Length: 264
Length: 280
Image 1: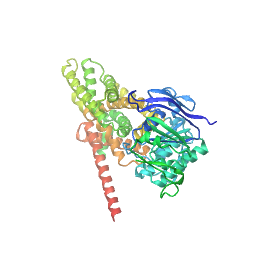
Image 2: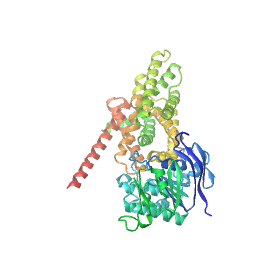
Image 3: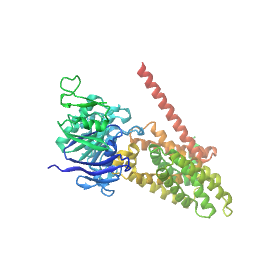
Image 4: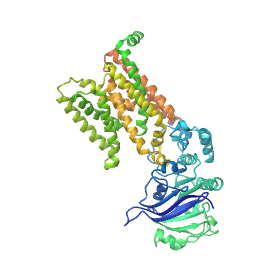
C-alpha cells in the first residue's frame, strides 16, 4: 500500500451556523492525482490553503506525510510541498530572470549557505515545463501562459512529495492545459508525487486524474477514475436548475472518456 | 574643476565625513531596493518624521540623541507593521496617524526643552559635516548590523516581495520576516537622519532603487546599480555642498534626483524609440 501523503479527518472551517467547510475527510496516497471540482464559493481554495498550512482549520485533523500538521511541524512539512495559487494580480514587477523566479521555489532558497547544485535543479524544473531555453529571459516580458509555466517550475523545483494547485490552467490555452495535465500525470506516475488540483472544468481533467472530489462545503462524492458522478451529486453541488447532458463519442469536441458532465 | 576636487579631498571636514557618508550611501542603497520591492516608500516618510518625537524625547531628558531616536524609530516601525493586521486600519492611514502624532509630540518636546540648545535645522535637514566621533561609532554599528541582516535575509525578503503567499506556503515565517524588515527600515531611517535629516531621509531610501529599477534586469543587478547610484549621488552632493556651501543632505538628494530624471528620460526615449521601430 502506498504511503499516505494527505490524511484529513473531520475538518471544518468557518462559523458553525454557516461553515465554509464542513466535516471533510480525505485520504490521498503517494502517486495519486486528485481533482477537486465544485461551484464558486464551494470552499475549494480554502481547502487547498488549509492543506498548504496558510489557514488554520477550526476543527478536525490533518496529517501530511504521516505527520500531524501543527504550528511546530509546519515549517518542516511545508518544505516538501509545492504550491501554485491563483492570486498573481498584485505581484510587483520585479526585474527578475526566469531562472531567478524558479530558484525561489528551492527548499533552501532563503538559506543560501545551505544550497547545493541549485542551477541544475532549476534547469531540470524549467525543462519539465519546456521553458529551459528562456531561463535568462526577463520574467516581466513573458506572456501570461509562459509565466504560469515558470510558476509551475518554481513549484516543482524542490521535487515535492505533494503538489497543490489552485486552478493552474486559468491562464493557459487548451493545448497548454492538456500538456500541463499530462505532465502532472507523468510526474505522479514516475516520481510518486501526489497532486491535488482545484479545477472548474471536470471535462478537461477527468481523463488525467485518478479521482475527483466533488466539493460544496462538504465532499458530496469522491469518484474514482472511470466512475460516473451521479446526477444527484451534481444537483447537490450546483442546485436543481442545472441540466444534465450525457456526452458520448458522437459529441463534437468531446473526449469520449469524459462521460456525463453538467451544464448550468 | 580639478582644483575644486583637490580642495574637496584635502578638506579636513570632508575627510572626516566622507567615510560615514559613503557607509550611509551603501546601507541606504541596499535597504532602498527592499523598500521599493515591498512598497514601503510611505513607511520611510512616516518613520523618519515620527523619529522627531524620539529626538525630542532625548533632548527633553538630556539623553544621547541617536540611541534614543533609534529605539523610538524601531518601535514606531514595528507598531506600523502590527497596526493594520491587528486593528483593521489600512497601512497608509496608520502611517499618517503615527507620522502626524509623533511629529507634533517631537515639536512640543523640543520647544519646551530648556536644558539643551538644539540644532533644529540639522535635525530636519541633516548635516553630515558635523558628525561627532561618538555618532560615527553609532553609525558604523548600525550600518554593520543592517548590512549583516540584509546579507542573511535578503533572499527571504525577495521571495516575500515577489509572492508572499507562496513564500508562506513554503514554510517561511513571513510575518516575522516582515517585522524584521520594518525594524531595519526604522534603523536605516536613523542612519540617514544625520546625512539628510528627518525631512529628506525618504529621498535616500527611495531614489537609489528607483534609479536602479529603470536599468536593472536581475535582482543582483538591481542591488549593484542601487549602490552605484547612491555612492555617485552622495559624492556629487557632497562636492556641490562644498563648492556652493549648500546644505549637504539637500545636495545629496538633489544629485540623486538628477540621476533619476536622467535615467527616466533615457528610458522613456528608449521605449518611445522601440515603439516607433515596431510600428515602422
